[in-house]
Structures are given as C-alpha cells and as structure tokens.
Length: 114
Length: 113
Image 1: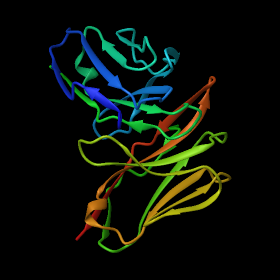
Image 2: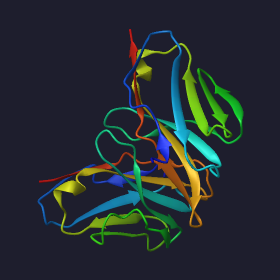
Image 3: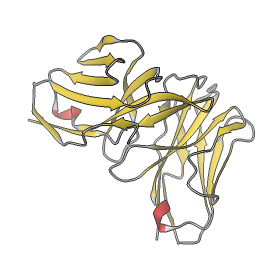
Image 4: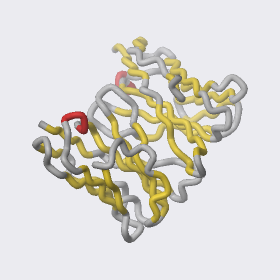
C-alpha cells in the first residue's frame, strides 16, 4: 500500500473489555513497530517485529498486552481486560529493514477506556 | 534520567523568524537521529534524518548533530504559521540487539502571524 494504515481509527471500550488494533504496514517493509502515545507525551516503544518474529516486546506494559504478526505483514495488538490507564493513541510504524533507518507512521488508533 | 530530552515549550516565534529546537540524548552509542513533526491529533511525519556530525539542510529546515556533546537541533528558517506543531526528536539506539527509537516528549512550536 501507499502508506501504513491502521484500524479502527477510534475505539471506545468499557473497562474490562478486550480490544484488537490492526496495522497494515507499507508493502515490502520488513520491520514493524508499535508505540503508545499518551496525551502530551512522545511515543513510547511497545514492541518490534522483523517479518513474523517478535524480536523485542520489552515495552509492553503488562501481560494484558499481546501482539502478533503471523504472516510477516499485517499485525494485531490485542489488549485484554482494558483499564482506564490504557487510554492512549496506539501508533504503528514500519521500516524497510529495521536496521536504524526511517520509520513511517500510520494514523494511529485512539483508544478511550471508560 | 530521560534518554532523550526536549524542552516542552511552547516556543513562540513570529512569522518569518528562525525557530530553533533542541534535543539532548544520553546514549553515546546512538547512530541515527530523526526529527518528526506532529500536528494535533495526527501521527508523526518525518522532517529530517541525520547520521553524521555537522549540518544537513533540506529547504527551510537544517538539522545539526554534535555527537561529542550528544546534542541534535532543528532550525526552521522563515517560520510560517503552518509550521505550528509539536516537533519530536527521535534517537535510534541499539539495545539488546534491537534498533529502537527513543522519542523525546516533543517541543510545541507556535508561529505567530
């Protein structure tokens, strides 16, 4: 595709509900990243995939967060039993190889947990 | 200590002036540095990348890198109201075998017409 796409763009969830956020990276990009951005803050790293392999998940805040990229293309970030503190914008980015070069961001999913 | 630090601002400059945005980082081994612009409610978009010491110019934008001082800056010449946004500094750091972006909190720039 022309750019990174994410869906849904907005999600309102009741506390305790499970949510799934989707990211479709730029075609041919090997590396995919997930970030969480709270209001007034910079994006915070969550996890990183190279093809289908999840090479780094050190930024996931708890075991309620789970990400996958089973075929090395589309990725899903799942949050189980959502809490109010999970409310944030979730950004997905992709890069050609992941070896330190430019990352291109999707539009983000704005999650509000009530 | 935060790994990437920026003044949160707001930095207000009059239209036509030079805006100077600064960023310091703690990991001396960092290799690549990026400036992203983020409009309110939008995702970050790349402005400049810089990999070696010195200046890099692209139109009205100049990035400056000083690895010895662990300092990277962005100059915006002839600032326009449309430049009003939050500017994020990102440092690419190799940590535990993974290249990872560490972002600053961003500097909010206001260009006054």
